[in-house]
Length: 471
Image (cartoon, rainbow, N blue to C red; front, side):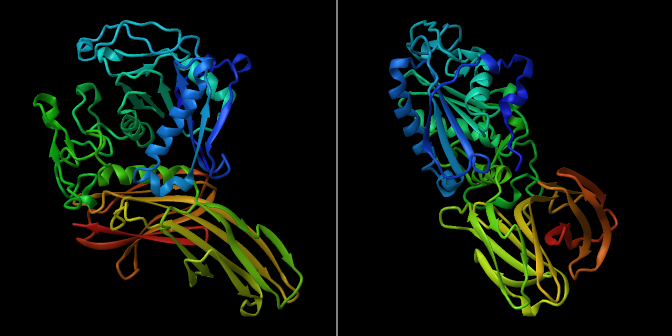
């Protein structure tokens, strides 16, 4: 599994001073599993003195419990660890230079405390935009104390309203609405969601929930059109804002506090979770030699990350033929195996209703393949696992171009074909061994007639099929 440490990517390694970085106490607020395999939320305080660390742990606990109690986080809480680093500031509180034009909206005095991350109001001339400006200190603390983070939350010790989000760091003050601020800002930082209110021209960009596309067949949330209030809604206020559109009208947490995430934002958060972790945590056997020709063989997914109200689909195949579904383990009778090589595969896919699976552009799934070498005296077993993301877009397409991509966790033999709805191969897209990483193939579909087609992926001995519609 590839874990992305956003902050350490954006900050030059020349700024890191790990040898001299200060270590702090780390509290485990929630532990679900191995930090190398599960998602790790790391919460740090700014403007909390040594005497206020008890307050920080209380604040961190309450904030994490709140957002993990909101949909869809609550459905995937079994995937998430939460840790708190007790960062000690010399002074209590947050900086306020009173330089923003809208400071009058908050009767907050000028202040300049010596806090550890330099968190300040009035960033970019916006009073409520609170940002930690000492990014080198953030990077050093993480590198020295918890380098295996996936998402950072910085809690700023002030009762005044403010926060920020992006690049893997969410920030919230301890204002009365801190819980909702945190959930909103984590939407930015974890899932790259845009504000659904118009935040200003400098923030207007294509995002999962922001676009300039107005064609219902091409808009990136086309699978949700007409469901749960999703449509194509113009941003307010005229000018450049009139060029941008959002999926809902005044009913999403990314627009206003105290709303749920809309269906588009919910799906994006779930897909971000899928992109980080492999739900198959462990399995048996990994390797085995069996010196008996009549012994039954047990295969098991010994640890799975399961959503609350489990939506994982588990499909077992022997030599490409379905044998069992939605069980964690199976038993194979050696007597049904002929001498030679056989392949037992298990494929795990999340079928959550938070994802519009029909013609969905991106599907994550995880696999284990056992290679079974059968002889007259017994057999040898070896296992390999992989986490795969297959994408077919735009889908449906009214144009002449189809993009087909695959993202691999492990080096694999990959075959990709475009076929008619009855399985007849129309075009070979790829047939090669690929190292781990993402690969994109762009093919011309101008000459095929309108209708439904199959994009068939074969990764090693695992087959996956996506429906593609040309219209």
